[in-house]
Image (cartoon, rainbow, N blue to C red; front, side, top):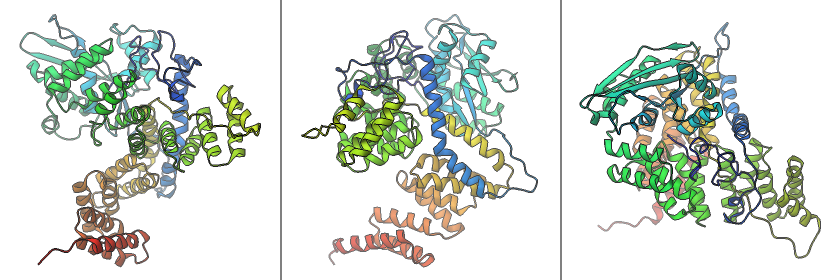
Length: 591
């Protein structure tokens, strides 16, 4: 999946670099960064710019990786500390998750007009291979690696160069391949490069009519998974689960990805959606292009079409929140960022949610800025925003402290001006400046960090028996759930269910996660949990589902069962009160 900055880059190799505060059209050598025009609410009127070079942008992403570790390590270490260690057991660094780089396939045919298929392989295979065990490097990061190594985008790199690129991306595996078409049969071949052991797998070949391109690619995906011992089941079942995509829709989407200007991209992506109405990747690209062009209403329209259960929903919600913010639709912006903060604990998301709720006059803005500073204390924008919020709450000394901390990091004219006005005791009191919102989106760094932490913990957990291993995942899932990180929690509970299907807590935790997005799935998991072992958590999930479906008598029965297990449970008591109130106002049916 390609990640764009939302504004068309001057060159494709530089288009992947993300600034820390603003998105502006980059030149061939720089990207304009902090204290940006968007940050002040007016994309046309701030003359101050800071250059974010290739090297400094890399440093920023590495810093974010380190800071995000503070969130995740706490949950991991807590689970490990409470997990039993087998006698004589040593810590192990076995990797259970891996990073995969997919190179564009080479066109070995002489047939004109099919060069676009080379880029289709990374796009399609990444969707088939991305999982909790494999993090697939996206196109923008691959282009960035080419740029850092000085490799032209049109070059056909040697195996040695591919290995060098893989090292840049810290990839464990690389897929390389080629394809041919003789006018009737399309043939694709792939190999897996194991970068740790410097091995190249045998060549896998799949063939068929060109119209079956997506099926051929899906079959190759299974071959790759099987080669690295991650195949999720029989090949025929894996391939049968692949959603068929029209070849003309795929071609338009890929040509849109490769297009060098916004009008051509828009034309191609819209055609892909016309041909394939559920093409969410094309919708995401359209939304980002319109956002980058400051056309916020169409951006909102396209981004809002992407379902919450779609693999691209996190990125869609981030840009939806930004587009709604700049369109002045703070309710939509808050909804988007609040959804995202439960799935992706990036400091930028916490900050943006704080800015939005602050604009809406809510007191919770302060806690979000404090959270951002806790994770990333050296970002001046978070201190600036917290200073504004403290001043609004009447804590001028606190605001002054934050501004002084900011100025100790770097010069900042706005912060200096605000500090001087607070120290002057001027009458009337000064107006607070505008908060700074973040526009850089870097989910892949968070996912890569998550994989590394997961690998570190799984090395020990794998030494346990399946039941203990599953119990550790359940505990970690509840820790994520308590922090509001439902996406991470769901992954932990699902892993626990796979390890030990008889773990009632894993099913109950998964039911709690699914409750807001999949009523049927939540009910099935809660019932599975109760069949294994009655619990308050599972009974309350059923009660809340029953109440939402207006089955008040059944809801009350499930609450009573929960209270029978734990009479003092506050959540059950509160829910019983809510059900009683709903029953009192429920209209009585006529006899």
